[in-house]
Length: 224
Image 1 (cartoon, rainbow, N blue to C red):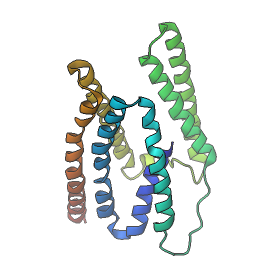
Image 2: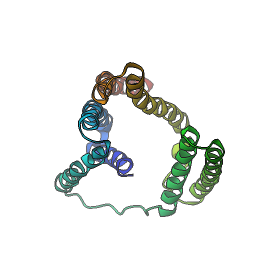
Image 3: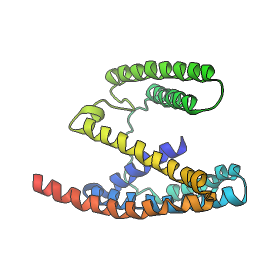
Image 4: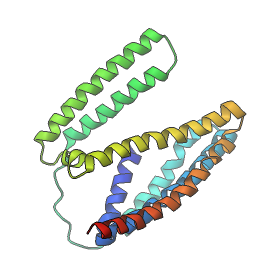
């Protein structure tokens, strides 16, 4: 939940502070992510190899405290604060319930235990996800400041872009989990070495993030 809140907040801060140069700033900002993709699996692999897997849940605590202090000290340019839009608490609850029930359904299908029990849990969670998704769409149509505005899902090309993003995100996250696991089970690598395999992907991500900014500006200039 914390990581899900940090990502859009950080991107929004960058876009707000850089104005018309937000495309270049966000491109450079996203090029930093792969550095974490290089360091994270290696550090995580070392912790799992030499300590316990439970330790990995403590790594984010000191980093989060430092990050919160730095944001409080640095991210404030002194401008008059704008009146914030109302927080869609109901929409946030519905979205969280949708994601939780959907993940529960998928996890039950791929888990271990009695097939009948897993099927019942997966089916029940899927029904909850379907009902919550319908309720969330209904809520978004009726709420002016919905947490997921419909105009960003289907308007002005956002629908196709979100579809591509969904497929890409599923592939990228699945790749990050599959490669180390396959390396450990098929080739007997220790977690430290298996996590290091993701460094190749991270290096390429840095380059493509910078290239996307240049392509975006050229395509926009040609279209105008």
